[in-house]
Image 1: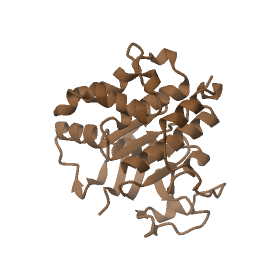
Image 2: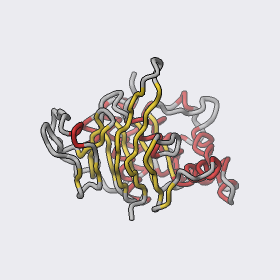
Image 3: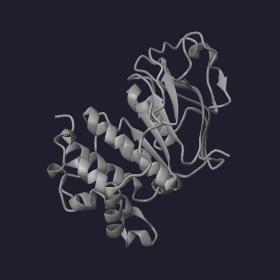
Image 4: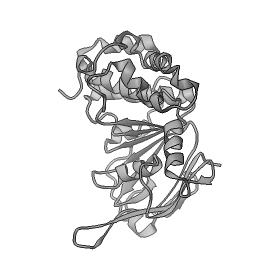
Length: 286
């Protein structure tokens, strides 16, 4: 049984002219624990909407989202919030750090809502998470004193501090230079392997997407395997656990065929992270 399963998920909204705008169309997807999955697509293809549904931040117009085989549609708002807080970690393109708080205080923020003993251990858990991403020497630093790469690593520490079962990364390298972005993706993949959390990366960058174990493409709201090219019958691929609309899938135009990068290091260490931090390339988008 898949950890997360989407069954025939569609999302539409009413436009200003009262017409119906279809954002997602019949998306079917299974995500296993510990899997690294990437979803690539152009701006406006529905990537962020799909991530919001996976993260229980939005609800589909039709279809079903299941966690551990249990439908989420009937959950009350507070139950959804608790599930999201306990099982899902988010990493965004913009780091969304509180400027007046230290790195440790930013990482501890999700634990302020904990209802068990983790609330009382929040400071220690925040230090552990920052150590995991190689920032144990930056515990008391404010975001304004951190480089772009360091800020994104603080955001990753915040995402993993509650040991979620899935990490949802929305354009995690979008605000970083290429070299720093590559290091951030290696760190995310290493943390996923070490903790057993599934990692779902939403991106428009083909190179970032190709790092995943499994790469899918979202086009005009339809999800297909990345290997589907012009004229390919991608209505269903049993190997990927993905099933999508046949007529739209055959219209996809893929420009590149990318190989999965299997050479990424399997272990993240604080020493390595601190060493690479010393380079000026991790200055973010400046």
